[in-house]
Image (cartoon, rainbow, N blue to C red):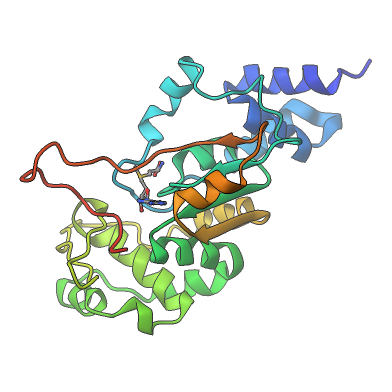
Length: 247
Ligand SMILES: C[S@@+](CC[C@H](N)C(=O)[O-])C[C@H]1O[C@@H](n2cnc3c(N)ncnc32)[C@H](O)[C@@H]1O
């Protein structure tokens, strides 16, 4: 006898130790005649964040689950909307992977990059493959003004700088110019093409906008899930805070 949908989702969740929202997604994609094996294949294909991001929550996901900070039982992804108004590297989005979601951030280049990954991933991959790991080249790319670049070149520059600059930081000066130094990595993965393709698929039904978090507050309704992860304030004026955006 076939399992009920609820039972099957629970079985996927327990077998692979994943959160309930992602288990629903896996169930919706899996071949039901070969449920667990196909679920394993889908889970192996899960994307991860495509940028390193200060304050990124990837290391904390297991704890979020243990502490019941995800609302798996209360939140029905089919009825409520998923909002992430401070998306940054999107560690929680890429963990939950809801099919539809409303992501936003104030960092314009980051938002452009999400949208290029979503809509033009193959050209982005081609462009990323052309970059060089060399300090003089890095400085030439760093000095470019993203406001004068196409969206594709903005995304390519953004990922290149994130992969090659010191600690993957994003920091701009008072005129909005990116000013993080060269990172001296021996072999950074500038173009993780498999992950970019997986991320592109995951973003297919996702809206990604540059906007202040307050806009989301106006839209979210009862039954929606909003994950807030605002920036940290420096503990003192001399503490080295990394600014995420010039705006
Ligand atoms: C702590 S980080 C989020 C990290 C993210 N959860 C992750 O796992 O990578 C905070 C983010 O908020 C964004 N931000 C700062 N002020 C904002 C505002 N007023 N509205 C929306 N986003 C803002 C920053 O650009 C940054 O990406």
